[in-house]
Length: 624
Image 1 (cartoon, rainbow, N blue to C red):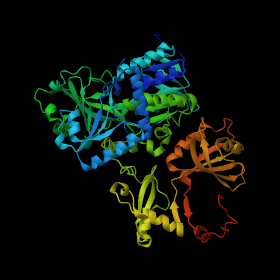
Image 2 (image 1 turned 90 degrees about the vertical axis):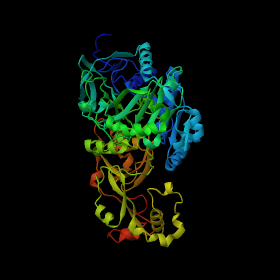
Image 3 (image 1 turned 45 degrees about the vertical axis):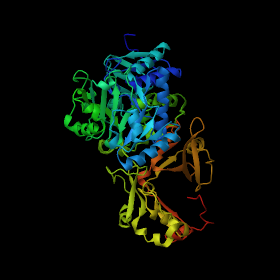
C-alpha cells in the first residue's frame, strides 16, 4: 500500500523491537486494520534497537520483569533469532559476592537455572578473563544474544501475512488528535489517519509524542557508552556471533561480550548524561543514527581501565583496536520500570515505553492482552503508567531520579533503600513535630512518612530481646529495632501513626450507590457511617485492589487506599464512572490529613480530645 489509509483500528507509532512486537501480538490475537508508522527507514529506523548490544540476562529481583524476560526469550527462540551463550556476573568484592547469593535466590524463585561458581570455573568458561581479581561468579546457562532487527522483521512479516498490518516508514507524526478526552487519530507528514486506539512505542521520543495529545510519559533519554574492539585473535575461529559466555563486571557497572571477531565493552559507570527528547538529532542531522551520538572518550576512559584489569589478554593486545565507539541513547524512568498502559489523561492512547530488548516481546504480549481482555496473564501493575502522581511527571523529578538511578543499573540496591533526590515534596501538617521527635522519614510517593522515631529509643531497654534485633547486616539495613519496640508499646498502650500519604477519593451523586456496588466485592448498601474493607476485581475476577470505603451519606462515599496504589486505583475508578455523570469522583488526598490511633487505650486518647461519646457501644468498629 503506497498511501496512508484514512482510518485504522489501531495505529502503532515506532518500528523498533517494541512496536514490532506490538503489531505481532495484535495480529496473533485477531486484531485487524493495524497501521505501523516510523519516521525512519526499515529495518533499522534509528532508535535504540539499532545499536543495542542485544544480550539478555535472565535474573531480576522483580518477579514481573523476570517473567517478561523469560517470555521474551521463549518468543525469540520460536522466531529462531536467539543464540544461547551463557553469561556470568562476576564479583570483585565480598559485598558483591553476597549480592550474587541473593540473585541466585531470586533466580531459583523464578525457576531459572543458575549457580555460583569459583574463579577457576569462571576461567574455564571465559579463558581470557583475569580470574585473580575476582572472588567468584553467578553463572546462568540460559543467557544469550538476540538478532533484534531480524526478529522485528519476522514479526512484521507475520502480521502482514495475516492481512492485519500496513507499514509506513519515513512517516513522521506531526500531531495526535484528541476529542473529549479520547484519542481520535494521528496527523503525519504523509496524511492523517483516524483511529480510536494509538500506541506510542517510540522509546526515547515517547514523551514528545505524548505531549502532542496532552498526556505524560515520564522518561528521559540518557547516554550509555559502548565500544567495539577488534579483531580479537582468540575469536578468529568462532562460527557465528558468539562462542564464550557474556560477562558482567558488576562492581564496575560494566560488561564485556563477544560479537563475532570483536568484543563489545559497555559501561553504566560514567556520569549521568541526560538529554531532552526534543534535542535528539534528526535522521538528517545524525552522523550515524539519531540515537548514536559522538563518543566522549574522557567519560569512558576510567571504565576502559577497569575493563583492562579484567580482560588484559584482549584489551591489552596491541593488535586489538577500537573499531566503533558511541554514546548510545536509551530511555530511563524515575523508578527504573517500564511505562505501560493506557494514559490516565487520554482514553485510547497507550504507552509501551522504556523497554529493553530483553523484555520487549513479553511486555508486548502482556499489553496486547490488556488491550484485548483487560486481564493480561503476566501482571504489569508495577509498570503501569497510572502509578505516577503529578509531581513524578515533572522535569525536575524525572531528571533527579534518573540521574541518581543511572549508576545503580548494576548496583546493589536494598529493597528498602530510599531515594536521596527530590525529597520533601509532600509534607503532612505533622511534619515539623515529627521531625522534632527524631522521625526517620521514608518516602511514600512523594510524602515524607515516619518509619520510626529516635525519641522512642528508650523503649529498647523496656522490651529487651522482645524487639527481636536482626543479626545480619543486610536484614538490619534501612531498619531499626525501635520499629519493633514501638509496635510492642502500641499493642500494650496506644500509638499514633501518620497516614496522610493514603490516597482519598470522594464519590458522590445520585448514582453513587449503584456505582460503588458495581465496583466493590463487599456489600456497599450499608447504613450511613459504616466503613467497609473490600476488594476490587479485574475483568477476569482477579484482585485489582484492596481498600476501604466509607458511606458518608446516602449518595456520598469516601475511598481510602494506599499511597503506592493511589493513582492506579484512581484510574480504575475513573475509567468505570457512569457515562451519564450520575456519579463523580474528587481526589481529596491533599485536603485531608489522616492519623491512625491504635492500641488498647486508643479510645481513651481519642475521648480526651472530643465531647462525643467514643465508647465501643456508641462508636463501634468500622464506624465513621
